[in-house]
Length: 221
Ligand code: C5P
Image 1 (cartoon, protein in one colour):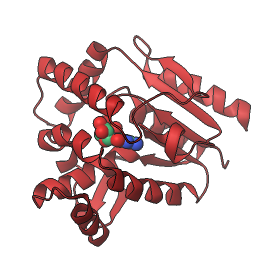
Image 2 (tube, rainbow, N blue to C red; image 1 turned 60 degrees about the vertical axis):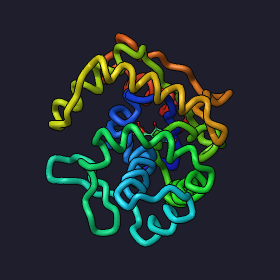
Image 3 (spheres, rainbow, N blue to C red; image 1 turned 45 degrees about the horizontal axis):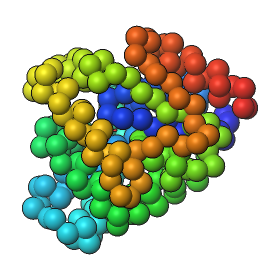
Image 4 (cartoon, rainbow, N blue to C red; image 1 turned 180 degrees about the horizontal axis):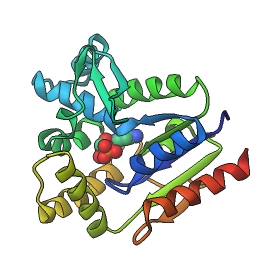
């Protein structure tokens, strides 16, 4: 057991959560998918037709986000008692999440929750602003990128496995749009932290990426 904090940031579908989960399991660390938190809050806003950040936060406080694992080891996401794991991956949430996550008070609320979770020990956290805002003093920071084509193909495969409606060409456009919105927003845009290691995973296997990050982490323990 180690107390290392690993921050993995990068654009949509760059493989962050896939590798973060494996690293957390291999190294006995907590895993936190911060994208799932922004998705859960977006789901709440859409389902209740809320637009004002204060109203969205109030409802999020009444329906706290928590995580679980199913019998196959898959991550489950709850809002209060309700399992929203599938719902937060649906199209309407994906196409609205960048808008909701650009709201400064929503970010403040979720960043506080993320730091609280990280205060419990070693953690692998993936997102857009982990190395820059959430855990600026994380021991290891990785900035994971891959070409839009490869990311769209990975997401398409994932969607098909999860029975989520998916079209490869539309995914390419959506991913590029989400990259643009996430990197140009005013509050905590997606940027590489100065001390992050840049890793282009285009053409790399999941194992290769995991091994690269774990080797760097082991050097720090
Ligand atoms: O990681 P995922 O693609 O599920 O994230 C969904 C969206 O949540 C991102 O496109 C981004 O708008 C937002 N997000 C964020 N900050 C994070 C994690 C995700 O703004 N730390």
